[in-house]
Length: 234
Image (cartoon, rainbow, N blue to C red; front, side, top):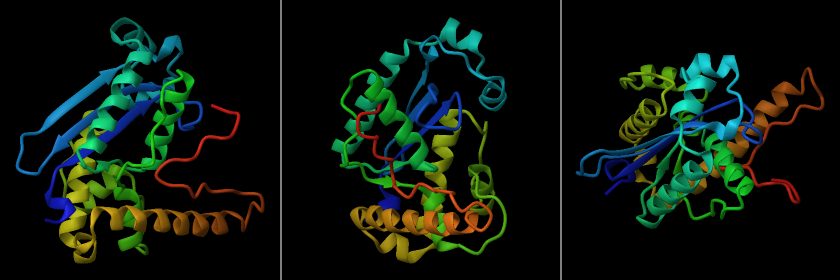
C-alpha cells in the first residue's frame, strides 16, 4: 500500500516568532488521520514559559499573552508530551506530515534541548507538502503557503493558523500530492524521505543563488527535516 493511503500524523506549531532557534511554542497539535481508522487529535496550549507573545504573532494565531498565562499548561510539560507523541508516532511507523517541517521540527528540537530533554532523533520519516510541491510543480507562480496549497490541491482549510486545522490540512494536501503524482505514490516512505532531503537542499541552493544577486552574503539553510543544533549551543 502506498504511503499516502496509510495512516498519517499531522504536526503543527503556532509560536511566538519566525526564528526556530529562539521562538517558543504557543499551541501545538499532533493529529492522526487515514489508514481506515478514526481521526485522533491531541492539542496543547502552553504558558510560553512566562514569555511575552508579540502582537504580530498573536494577530496570526489569536492567542494573547494573557490567555497563554491564564489557560496555558507549563511549557516544559507541553514539550515533554509533544516529544512523547512524536516518538510514539515514529515507533508505530507512521510518517509525520509537517508543512515546512524544517521550522516546526527544529523549534521542537530546540525546546527539548532548553529543558535538558532527549532531542528528536533521526528515525523520523517526514512528509513535507511544501518541499514536495516545489519539486513536482517548481515553475508554478505565486505563494506556496498552506492556504495556497490547499487552494491548489482542492483541500478545505477551516480555521487557518490554528495548529489543529493546519495539521489536518497538511495531511490532506500530502494525500492529494500522492494521488495526483504517481511517481510520489510509487516511492516507499524511506525513499520519499530521502528524496525530500535532496530536494530541500536543491531548493535552498537555488534560493540562495537568487538572493546573492543582491546580497552576496545571503545564506539559505539547506538541512531538512530539521537544522542540526550548533555545537555548544542550545
